[in-house]
Image (cartoon, rainbow, N blue to C red):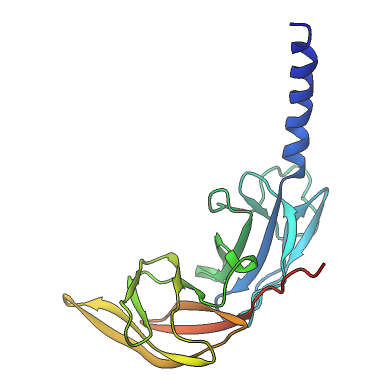
Length: 221
């Protein structure tokens, strides 16, 4: 029984170390073409800037994983102010997230963190983010079944169309006990890219934005 005390001490020491080493990989993306205010999040003992553009998700940045993602509006934590202006709920145990941002009423930043499978995504793993208050359904490929995506949720759709060709895309929303198409087009299917699809609210209308992302390159020995 003499080994129990050293073992307990070792476990006690490993606990804080493990907590300190937990990291989160973040990419950022603005839903709309608006300039976001200066925003910062902790990394170690400093605050690092978060930059947002609506053109493409940012390159990944590694930050400390905490209870929620604290976001500040100044590069230094204000004295005497323990709580940050924003604390973003993280999606479960995901270690890679895409942080979406937009401006709400009175220009106040709004955020949504979703799991980001970009590091392991395949060419056929298209990710849909429905940021509107309406349910939608997407049909990618003429002979496929529509995939429902609930309001305020995200979904990965496996695209079966052959690469270097294309796929018919139809997006609809429920209206008057039926489905009403509000978007119909034809998108290319690349061998080295996957597609990020954003469903956005634009006043009373819904609009669709596609972003093609390069697939991660395999590590070379």
